[in-house]
Amino acid sequence: MNGVELAFVLVGAVALGSGFLVVTTTRIVHSALWLAVCLGAVAGCFLLLTAELLAWVQLLIYVGAVVVLVLFALMLTRAPIGPTPGAPRGRVFLAAGVATATALVLLGTLLAGMGDEVVDLDGTGVGDGEAVGSALFRGWVLPFELLSVLLLAALVGAIVLSRRRQDEDGR
Figure 1: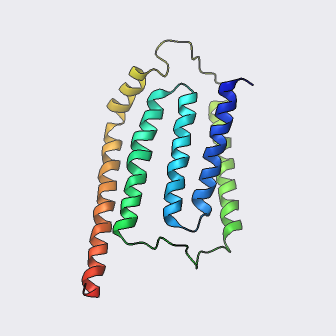
Figure 2: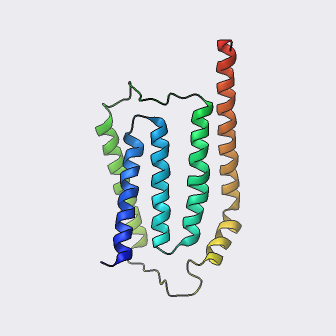
Figure 3: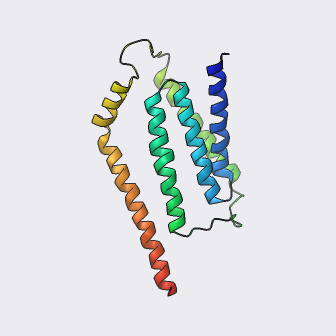
């Protein structure tokens, strides 16, 4: 095992560990911060796989925008930031079973779909910035714009809901 493979295993372990902490912590702000760590580790995995463009997109869009949007939404809605005392712990085994079944189905689909395919990384145009950028900004620009409108609508909805609670309380 060389240094890059070892670094990939370590960064992958950080991603898995922080992903586990995202769903198990009882503090919602800590969960959002662990999500930032998890998404940053995924960007590190992309970087180690020499997919620099995807690493930057991961950092800029997901860590830089989505996690910040989640934190702003938490602040605007005045969600409880302390530990949640009534967090449902009784359904952990059911949730773990559903997550495991979903992972097995996804893994089976991936293995059945990919089979013995091998990507030739020495070929020209495979995974370079021009090919990925062209596919991203020609064929996928509309879904990205729709997602940004959806996130904006969610933020505006959170503001409206927090204002409505203030008016009903008389403050």
